[in-house]
Amino acid sequence: MENLETLIRDRLDDARASAHGRSAHLFLHDGPLRQTVIALLAGTSLDEHNAPPAASLHVLRGRVRLTWAGGGQVLTAGQITAIPHARHGLTALDDSVVLLTAVTAVRERARGVPAGAAARG
Image (tube, rainbow, N blue to C red; front, side, top):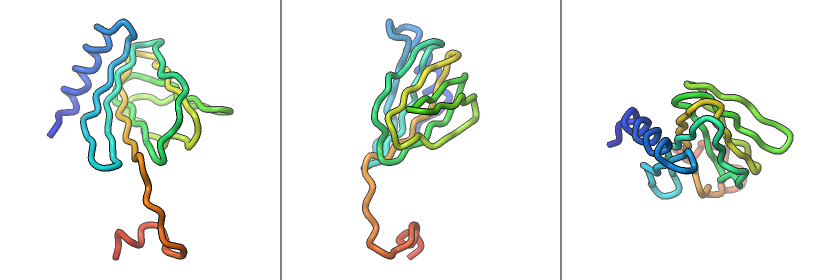
């Protein structure tokens, strides 16, 4: 079991010690599920990259700008959003820590089976 406050503190410390001003730690890896805590110092970015099949971004500390072609949004501590299914980037507006939850593979449903039906049955 991980302590989120410890992960936040450690990632910020590592980002401050890094020449790139960022730090990441994959702390949960279970099949296609990945959870990563990422710290970015103010003004640092994750360059544009491809999106996984499903992902969310939860801002734990600070303020970030999530950008994609034709759009973007500023998120502050406590906010969570789905990551668009398009190339996107992330810039820290303040020293920030985010929790990235990503699913790297999605099983296809059988035709005509509503979403969530397998979980109920």
